[in-house]
Length: 110
Image (cartoon, rainbow, N blue to C red; front, top):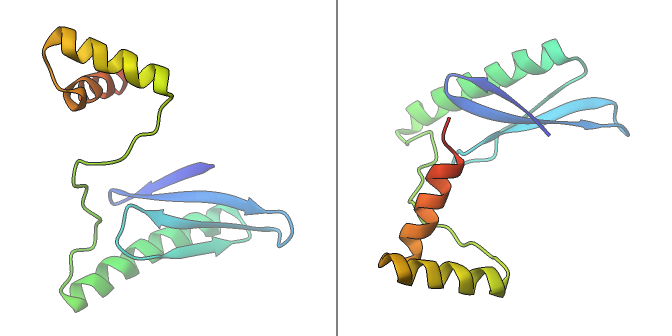
């Protein structure tokens, strides 16, 4: 899966070999907004138009256009890894949540 960006929004892009069309959706928003095209240039143009239309529609409705992140999510891991992480958090005298946060920060440094 590929992504495209415009005005801080991210669109995912996929290809349908059956329909011979490129298609995608705007990610991290509160609504489902899709776009499609036969060529890459048209897909980018349609993505930009979908973003602009979404922003304008939200403005007209008086609602926040971009999905907010609450800072919580479920993570499923192997029980053995869960136990090891729990032991490390105890040894460091921090919560398991803090250990996961630190691990993500370390992994996602840019």
